[in-house]
Structures are given as C-alpha cells and as structure tokens.
Image (cartoon, rainbow, N blue to C red):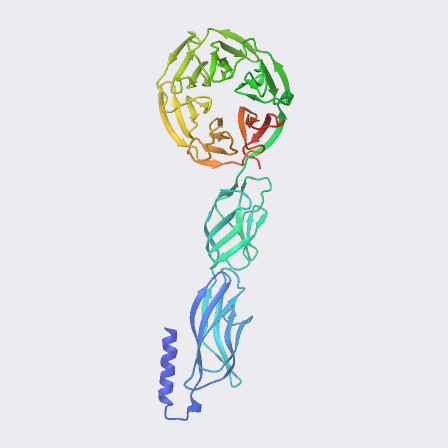
Length: 486
C-alpha cells in the first residue's frame, strides 16, 4: 500500500510539473519490500524515483532498534548513477529483536530518506535431527530454520564440527567423541543463547574388556559350559590337536581366578548343560562315527549327581532350565525339531509340540518370566510358551548371521544377541518394543566361536575360541561386556 501511495504521489507530481523545466522535478526515495528475514540476517529493497538521470553519491539502508534511529546501523551501497531499485543485505542482527529500517540516498549534498518499516528478526527453530543413535565420527543432520552463520552445535560439552549450513535450515555436523556419557543433550549455541533439542542423542555403547585367558593356553572345541553360584564352568569337549578334555575349569568372576573341577562321568563332546543339568554327548572315534553317552547328571554347584540315563541320544542339543526341570531343544541325528521336557519329580521325559525351526547348540536361548526366547541360527527370534506348548515369531535378528552358534542373554527388558560364528556384531533387543539397537563390536580375533557365556553383576562375559582352523598359539579368551559403557 505504501509503495502504491508513493508511486501515485510521484505520478501526480510528474504530471503537475510536466510543463516545467525537467531539472526542477523532485527525486524521491522509497523503502520497498522486506525480501528476507532470518535469525541474524535481513534483506530489503528500496527505490530511487526520478524521471531523469541522477547521481547518488551514496545510497543504502539505515537500521535501528528504536524508531528514532538514535543508534543507527548503516548499510552503505555506494554510488548509484541512475534511478531504480536497489537491494541490500545485512547480517549480525540479534535474534528475535524488533528493528526499524528505512532506505536513503545522498543526492546533490542532500540526504533523502524513505518511510520507516518495522520488522522483527526470527528465533532459530530445530524441528528434528537424525540419527538419534550412532557412533562418534559419523555425520548427523539437524533440520529447522534460522541457523545463522557461526551457529555452534554441542553434544553435551563436546563441540561438533559444523560441516555444512544449507540455506540456514539444515546443519550437517560430525558427531564428536563421547566423554563417558551414553545419553547427551544436543544443543545449538547462537549468539551466546542455547537452544536444546528435546530428544537427547545416544552414543552406541558397549565396552569389552579382556579379563583372562583359559588356563594352560588350551583351545577346547565342542565343549560344555554352565554358570551357577559356584562360578563359570567350562570343560569336556576336545582339546585342539589333543585328547578329549576330562573335567572342567571353573572361573570365579569376583576374584578373577580359575580352578579345576573334576567330573565323575565319561569324557565326551557335544553334551548339553545348564546351571542344574548336564547330559548326553558323544565321542567320535572316527570321522562322522559316534559313540553316544546317555548319562544324565544333576549339577549341585560344582558337584555332579548321576540320574537315570536319557531314553534317547542327544548330541548338540540346546538346553534351558525350566521350573526345576529341563527343556531340551533339537540337536543333531534327526532331532533338530524335537522339544523334550524333563520332570524331576517323576524322573520322566515327555515330547512337546515340534519346533517351527531347526534348533540345537547352533542356536541360543534364555528364559524370561514364563517364556523361553530362542534365537535360531537363521536369525529368527521365537518365543516358546511351555504351559501352552505354543510358538510365536517375535522378530528377526538384523545383523550378520555368520555360521550359527550365537549368544543370547537377557538383563531386565533388554536382550543381547549376536556374536554368530566368525562375526563380531552384538545387538540389543528391547523385549517390550521389539526395537533392535546395535552395540559396539567385540574386540579380539574375528575368526572366533563362542565357547560359553554368563552374567555377573550386570555384565555379560564371553569366552571366545579362535576357529579350529586358525593356526598358532592363540588361546581361548574371556571378555567382560558392559552394555551401557563406552
């Protein structure tokens, strides 16, 4: 409206003075359009109005935080040799501040000014960012508006290098190194003001610490293991390039020491074991020829009580304790889909509904409440309901599935699964939301297989053996994993 009024007045004046000398026609300055308003930047247009050639020794805009222009901010555009439009851009303004602006021109020693326009700079707004979970060194994008040059980004107290600022609406930063905190606030610092994003960033976590080597520098394969109040027991199986291992080694996580535990049964490989039971297995006197052992044992701490023999062969079966008894899943020799249950009160075995996938020690399982969660070698995660004898597919492991033999442990509502054979990936599954989250990769030799695992004081321990084909003097290594440490 203001522009139309100025143009109309100027047209009337031109008409009135059309018959007079051209040199007497007036020269006007108009403050026209506000073209852009950002956080610290303004872009505005003005116009020098005349019906003849005119020389302005200077022209531009004047800004101020008060209408009287007591403390003006001058934007000089220099000489202008003809009438017409001009545009000025100025940065360095304060965020969310009201400003007054007017165009000006210096003509013939006189200062001509346009009408005053009032405007207000904007405040930065961050609408989203991604990813919200990741590793230090990766790129992260923050979207929003009014991010002026000089915007700084912090993850907690760590400043993140700003790689790009696209149209003051998209920031690309590099995630800085963590300082020990897994969850940190993400904040923008602009003109000494902090703008904290509502969702904190979560660093990919999981700290591995090697705590011990297996005694004697041995490498045992096809072994059994279990953990109870007496400690972590690893034994039986076959020593690399040696005889079958006769007993167990017991690790005390409180003291970090190993001790020998004798086993009254026969030597064997491929036996199942839980905190309370051990049984089955076989010896292999010749390639793919097996002598089965059906002895079945009750475990009491580090001692063994023989029970009635198994009514079936069991080689590489997957076992979990269940309400004082035992559930046995799959195994080799045609048993991969079988589910068997042991009743300690009756001393009897029963067969349950067939499993929906092949199982055995190349899979992993844990008990949570009234359910058994099973991670198959194909990556499928199933939930078995023993009272109903029913199966439900929950989700699928998103990482590399390697060649089976993963681990599965549960702490509260979080399950930790992975470390398939010859892989280093471990993932966290929220059992309430079924959302997966990758954890840091395990250290050590990638070409390894799990020889046992257990929990102690909120940490998970993994015993890893180099693949049998790996030559050299490498031994089995025990690692401690803290899920929420960096």
